[in-house]
Amino acid sequence: GNLRQLETLDIRGTSIVMLPQTIIKLQKLQHLHAGFPTKGNYLCTRHVLHTYGFNQLDACTSLCCRAATPCVMMDKDYGGVVLPGGTRKLKSLHTVRGVHVSCGDVVIQEIGRLTGLRKLGVMGINEKNNVKFCSAISNLSRLESLSVQSDKGCLDDISLPPKNLRSLKLEGRLGVLPVWIKKLQNLVKLKLSFTTSSQV
Image (tube, rainbow, N blue to C red; front, side, top):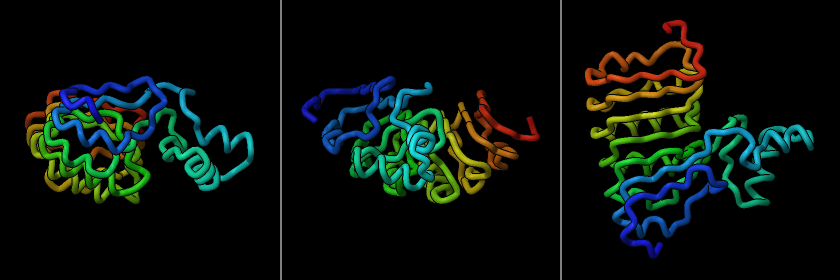
């Protein structure tokens, strides 16, 4: 929190899963890079499931409560960080990568208020939080790059996609591409990963 002149914070490749509240003091922060896109580097609920025979809810609760660790892994092979409340105050942020949003709506609300964002990468979009996430994305009119890991059909509710979007990466079981993609007149890069879309 004392690094008041910091403009870039890169914690990729670390075991950090939650940013401290003091990050909101970094008013000059422009770029936040997080996440670990490789297997086996987190205390994963899969280990608890297989070793102790817990169901997913019990495993998640056990890890969250005993280790004070947010449930950012579930059945995925990579994790991200959870943003603290008040992140919306970081008005200089242009880039946010590797944020996990499945543990609650607060993180999504914070992201939706970062109206200066140019690049955003999130994971953990599901049927429970997709409507609020889609609403948040519609607020980010300056967004140029978007990377999303989501469940099937969880991006269909974006009514106003960012008109300046040039790069879009969708990861997950899409089924079909969201209809709003055809509105992206400035899109020059589209990457689909681990999809089952019949349109590709």
